[in-house]
Image (cartoon, rainbow, N blue to C red; front, side, top):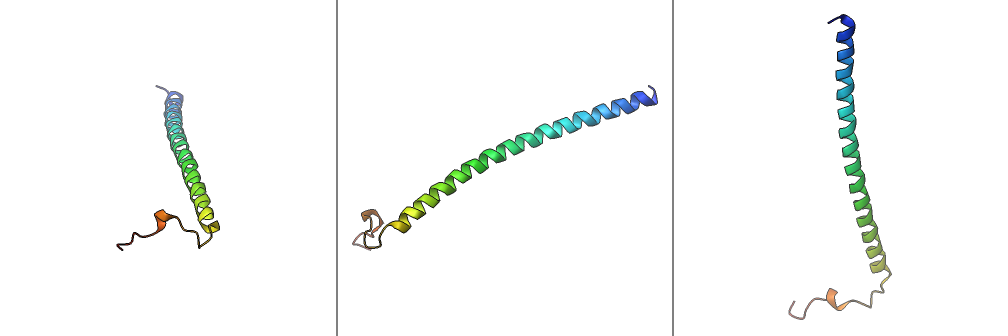
Length: 71
């Protein structure tokens, strides 16, 4: 093989390696993006629940929140 053939082969190997790394990074990014979306939804639900609890007057408590008489 000539020097030029060796250089081309080396570049092709490097390109294949870079493409594989790019695909792996894309998979990781997609997975993390989906996880961020899920976590954002959870935080929004928690914020809504917190806001509802905050807006509930203190005198009005839910029976489920009260301790049973034997405590």
